Image 1: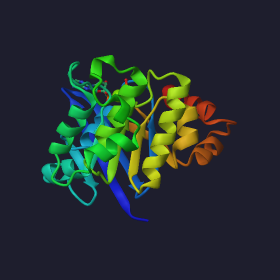
Image 2: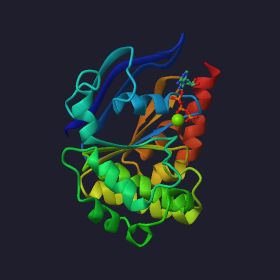
Image 3: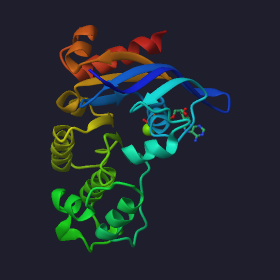
Image 4: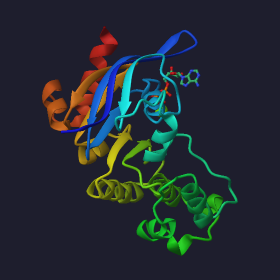
Length: 240
Ligand SMILES: Nc1ncnc2c1ncn2[C@@H]1O[C@H](COP(=O)(O)OP(=O)(O)OP(=O)(O)O)[C@@H](O)[C@H]1O
Ligand SMILES: [Mg+2]
């Protein structure tokens, strides 16, 4: 298997407190890789470092064979990111947003085709502020894909969605994998991680405390579900 992301002993501190305290991970080509963990564990910081949006303080990081610290510009062309705090101007229309994002890339996809593929054509003239949460998420997925990325980073994409919209989004994420895109998915939902992720890492206080397939983590914790495994694994570190 080919590693799309190779992270070794990655460290990042804000002021004096460490957000990433020696993270080591490997994400293989074509997988949906989950990142779970309590609030403040360092998940968004990790995603931002991998995406070239934040500089790590120590350790090594290779993403698509590049170092985000030195090859940031090239890397930004190859990655699609939906960030946790993502927002667009209220007045921007769906089609305008897609056209604008496409213009950021040297080799974008045909933004009109992406708009069609993700079911957004009927809403192309709707302003961002007037989209429901589910349609906003769908637009963010389309925006993450409009640059024709090889790697997509999704940070809490389904938070705030109703159960039906969440299931629809799962289908969209699987579709990305079928198209050969590697997906990193930060999620707090263990049913989501179990349904979607080929492998996942549980992060707590800047450390990877468990990593593997959902099945392997369930077995490791001696649990009957990934949700129970998650509680067992994160409680163990609480007691340390
Ligand atoms: N810009 C920042 N300045 C200072 N501290 C920060 C900053 N961003 C994050 N932190 C701190 O770094 C730690 C990790 O934050 P991060 O946002 O990476 O966690 P997270 O796992 O994504 O949490 P959540 O599940 O709440 O999204 C936290 O203690 C947080 O307070
Ligand atoms: Mg976060």
